[in-house]
Length: 412
Image 1 (cartoon, rainbow, N blue to C red):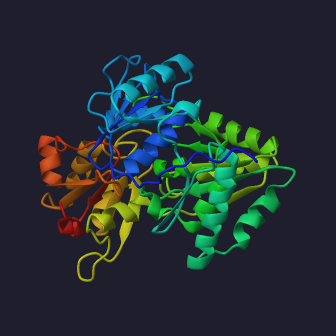
Image 2 (image 1 turned 180 degrees about the vertical axis):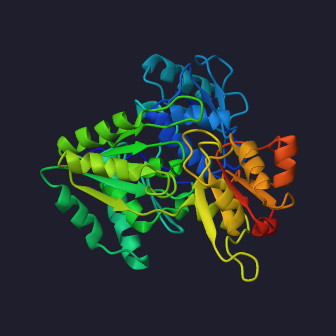
């Protein structure tokens, strides 16, 4: 008779506001941190270096990053610990410290001695499916996928979609561009979830819904290609090459990004690169932050009697810059609600250009930061205040900026 599986007590941990320490800051840590943030844990990451997405989260105050090697005492006050480094000795030290402090601990490289195991997890709407496979990640992932498929079929899924994606990729590989929405994993489309279930490789950036990474089956390669404003950045040409190379190896490569791939997401550049290389490519639309973030802040971009339309523009290049192709005078006169993406650094010259072109100085401006995330915050001001005194001191990236009378509806 074979050895019986170790008995486990399956629990749902309520980690909101509770400290969780993750030692390591590579791709494995990234997928765990995304899940912890979705649970609203207070996450502390300990590692001398970090992938760009984790660095960005730390700079935005979403997590704490102790940029140094692990030290004795780092687990103080923690409710849960995760050893996710590539160094077995460090992971063993974290596990030993956790055991001594009676803190449950997961170990990524060797779960045999860990006091807690991470199940294979998948989500569909309000349902969460978690499966343990007695430390066999492939069994757990297979059972998870079967259970999740049953849940999806019972709720809303088209069971043929996943099979069709695999059939198209057979032999040659393919690239799937998935618009991940504004950041809340529940705003990722069902078709996007199904594409991730098929993925062999996920190429992700900092504004994607990072919590979904934890639901990927074991063995999926995660490649962080984040572009941090005025910081670390992966060239677009390198991203294109990664997509093509992965597909040519016969793998399903999912390019997961925030919002919608075709709204300031450089998605068409990636589509063109794939087509020129003869690689099959599919695009799955996403919920754009241009509309979702204002809506979640209580701002209607159109409203009868106030605004008959809205205009979405990039603020990446300031008015007056030789690289700008926008007619700011026309935008000022147009009377539509202005939605500005990537405009945090250029908000002052934008406000000045609009006022100079005749837009009233008392026009409301709402800045929606971290739209759709638990940390979402709204700051209200006016064009005149920004032009005269600068941006609100608490304004930070990423933010969707709404200019127009409807901005006054914002729920601060």
